[in-house]
Length: 245
Ligand code: NAI
Image (tube, rainbow, N blue to C red; front, top):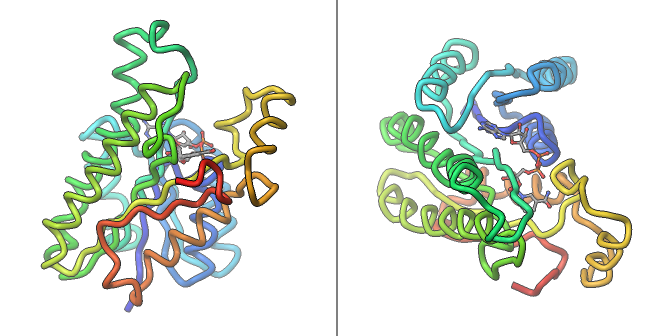
């Protein structure tokens, strides 16, 4: 069976490694981007040079018109998506009293509503094909909450709940819906932490290292597999034991 995956925010820190891992394992890969067209095109070229099938596709997950347009491009270039990785996300690191209506809406729009819109566009084809894999990338903060990341934590908690509920609706159609919740992964999203902040986080990680995009990609590869057909509605934490959630 040919496998076709779409990764939103696919040219970001974790997204890149997910695209690479799925491509190395035989998936045709649509690398979604919002900004950063060049990085997405470079990654798609890299995957093709490695013997895979890949395409870079513009997809702003907060905009249904953009999502539907991306779907048409992917169908034309690769075929029907059977594996959807809702990876696009933004963080908002500030006290809740410093959030504005705009910053709250932006975070919820990308981190929660975005995944819903993309699922809404792509899952009917999976139902028609009686097969699909949907993996949402949440966060450990969606489980235990984080000070200074109240809105982000709430959006990710919503994403975990969304996955659990959608899994129940889609299980009879052969579609699994799962969540992967990373801990601290060394990507551009965490670039603003100072050296001392990074060290104090590292001190709390039982595995004694920050996570990598590849750590997250390995969990996503497992959930994408044919063999994971009986795993649905779950949330796999990839955190090296951080916060022990
Ligand atoms: P990143 O900032 O490197 O990548 C995020 C990607 O999402 C970027 O490519 C960005 O352009 C894209 N994006 C942002 N808004 C978008 C929109 N409206 N439409 C489409 N794409 C959009 O961050 P990273 O670390 O790779 O994060 C990936 C996912 O992992 C996010 O959902 C994030 O919340 C989650 N995560 C990351 C953790 C970390 O420690 N880095 C920890 C827990 C979760």
